[in-house]
Image (spheres, rainbow, N blue to C red):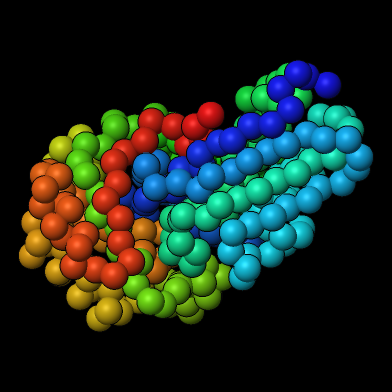
Length: 282
């Protein structure tokens, strides 16, 4: 076994700066066109290779499962199977990214586990192999493995470079969630045609994109609670504000750090975040 036996990693949350649904595959998965951005809010993931067999997962939040229902646990299972490595694995996740927010917390944790295990065992798997495992774990995991600013298509696995976003993000998590499965069921019952605004959004990068942001789920929900947070963020100085993922977190894009910090104080569960160049930080 490689001499590195334990690693502590930062698993970065993500925001969807642009999100549209473009279709549906035969297997039932929806195809997307989305621009994702890693941000500085992160979970702390510790990965340990140890004697014995099996995977043990602990988490700072009691409401999060610590068995195969957890994406990080599944990532470890698939890694050990694909790499042929043996021995025990201990995982610990200290959660900072809110759940049910559309910020990819579970996907980020899974990506950190893949990156950490590969490092601990001497990198037996190539980047392509890690990405193949990531797709099996979840749609956002490939992006969280790579991070930065990416245009993602398909179910999220078709990634290409995109101009990096500038700005400071104030992220607000309201006191309700938006389960992803229910969000897609709502879309299926009332589909919205693709907006086709990606090129206009790209042309506005890297500084003037905020007014061009779009999220199909925000159009679908027509939820006054979400709209009110967006309005307040704009009133407090944001150039634009929008739902991320299938929700329920909302973010505003600010130019001035002082205005961002002042705005953040107006909401009970909120963060001031910067863009991150990576999805997992060793």
